[in-house]
View: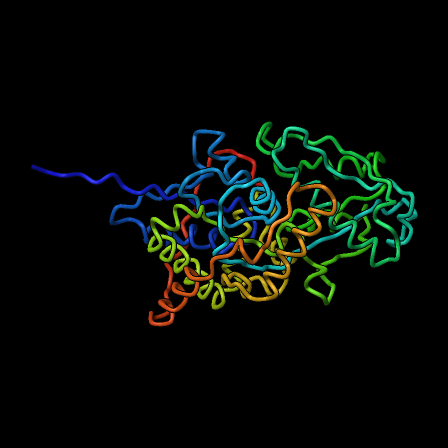
Length: 358
């Protein structure tokens, strides 16, 4: 008599951006690590169900390990989702405030009483792009001696995250700026860096140049790695293995900086390798190793406090109680005993046509 065992279903998600998960996936290391045994590895981005894909934001999918922007993760924790942080990556990225060059505005101080564009996605579970833009503006205004609470915020009606599909090169915030509907927009990452190269636009500031890393905190800095607590308790070895693969990818990235930029560019439709390299700077290949450093935790706490102060989350919580350091510590200890991995030439991964938001 033959017995069969139902495989454990493991989902992963990263949704674009500079993540260790994206590098590991594009090197095929995640697939290879779970090719044998009783674990079925699945990409959340390739799920047919929209509700499953939206688990990148609501964190309600059982067996999901997610590396991505901190705003949805913080919101989900505030709403009671029992996901736990098992690692954090911090890759600095472009965070610019742009105006039209012919506007006459030449400094952040001159944004007083000007129309500051905030995207508004009415159907979003958590409007992370709106929160991210407000965070960027608030930081810049405060540093310029202006009161963010007195700013003239202007709504920019924006499409839902996935429907309709937004084509590379289309950006409602840039359209609003160029048309004169708003006077300034905040853009980040490779798309923001690419927009800043437009000779018709002027960059007032790039927060990524600030010396204090906590002033650079936003949705993508830092990025938590989360897993639902029940899955971690049932399958700690699977979580350790996943984190170990991310660590291997991060160590590989440190030795292959140019290839890393190309891999991350593949995660950002419409952006070139040069734009990705410009957006993330020289630290891109060094920032992918998961950690739970005091700075990363402080960045996560600062972001949580901002979201609470501005009403993007309803309930406060203790970030330290949100973190379980054991899986990462064990995974990194195991990595120290292994030889450094090498990778074959990365093979492209074709994903379904869903709009990726960090």
